[in-house]
Amino acid sequence: MVERLAPDQRDAELARLHGWKLERNGDAIVKTFQFKDFSEAFAFMTRIALAAEKANHHPEWSNVWNKVTIALTTHSAGGLTAKDIALAAGIEKIAAAQDRS
Amino acid sequence: MVERLAPDQRDAELARLHGWKLERNGDAIVKTFQFKDFSEAFAFMTRIALAAEKANHHPEWSNVWNKVTIALTTHSAGGLTAKDIALAAGIEKIAAAQDRS
Image: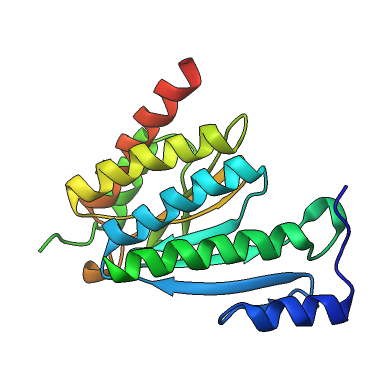
C-alpha cells in the first residue's frame, strides 16, 4: 500500500507541479483546466481516463462545457500519496500536448 | 431559442423520466448513476458526450470512480427546457443499454 506523503515531501512535490492547490486540509490537490470547447475538454478527460485506468488510480472530477476540475487524493491512504503526484504530472503532460495542437 | 418549460409541462415531462430530481429551485434536474467500476462509468460518460455534442447541449457532471452525477439545465433559457428532457431521456437509454450488457 502506498503511503501518505509527509508535509515536507508533499510541498516539495507540489513545487514541481503547476497550479495545483491543496484542499481538504492538505489531503487533496485540485486544479481547473479550461479548453476551447466541450470537444477539447472531453478529449482531455478521455486521455486522463486511459492513464488513470492504467495506473489504477482515478481522479474525482467534474466538467461544465469547456472546463474540467480535477481533485486528486488517495482514499486508501487518507491523503496525498506519490500516486496523486504521478497522476497530476501525467495530467499536465496531457494538457500541454493538447494546448499545442 | 428554446423556451423554459412552464411548471406543469416540467412536471409532466419529469413524470415520464426515472429518478431525476429537481434542484436549483426547479431549474435543473439531477441524477446519480452507479456502475460496476470506473471503466463502465467512463464508457457511459463517453456515450453521453457524443450524444451531447450532437445535440449541442451538454451536461454538468462529475465522476468519482464508479459513480456519475449529472445535472441538466439550459443556461440560455435560465432553467429547464425540452433540450434537458431530451438529453435526460437519451441518458436513460444509454444507461439501460449498459445495464443489460
